[in-house]
Image (cartoon, rainbow, N blue to C red; front, side):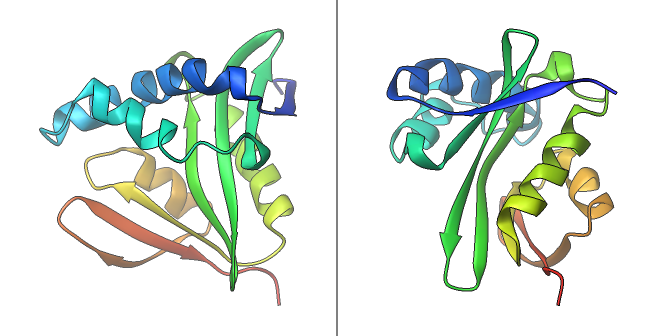
Length: 144
């Protein structure tokens, strides 16, 4: 099993995390006909809150991050990205286990319809609740 480390983000992480988001989303956004690098970066930077952002490190390298926001009925997973070079090696499952434990209850999220990440969320107990033109929205109930 790959050893991952976690740390809270700092304001200095904003740019590198936006770059990581673009790298992680590029193929899915291209498939959806919606790739715009500036918009992809702005989606993260416009609401960046380092106090809610957890960086994922492998060795000394930043390989991903997630943003877990508290909401009245649990938590909303606003962002979760791994660099493509680290996908498919079990890192995502390790991070998701941490997210589920950290949330401690229900989790909601939205994912781009054209993204293969939808299979990942289904495997981890997320249930689709609705969809719009571009995204599928999910709910994962916490333990009762």
